[in-house]
Length: 141
Image 1 (tube, rainbow, N blue to C red):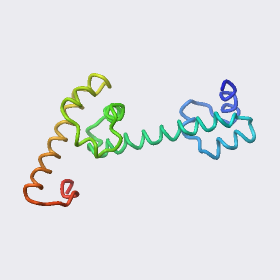
Image 2 (cartoon, rainbow, N blue to C red):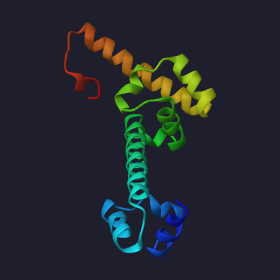
Image 3 (cartoon, rainbow, N blue to C red):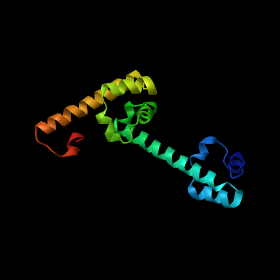
Image 4 (cartoon, rainbow, N blue to C red):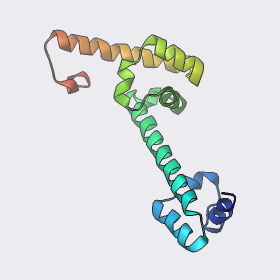
């Protein structure tokens, strides 16, 4: 929708990053007052929601991997690979990390750190299983 650019600008959007901060109410106002095509507003809202969900996933991955040790690009590479929830990190294999490194730009140092963290979590899970501890939170404690 070529008119969407002008509607957004006329509605106060000055930088591309500001698009991702729009609310559904703001988009509805643009439809009602500025003449934004309603189909464009719906598509834009879907993209905004997708981006927010992706950002939340990246954040949860960084938290799970102890954010101070993982760059956001590393977390993004995991999401690009298909990791949808932080819990899925612990199921990744070395081959998966190799693929993520080659196909999604995971840095070697970040890859090594993630693999060490995965191994540590798996080792603690094995130890808990051998001790017949079924509390899933015990791994993190």
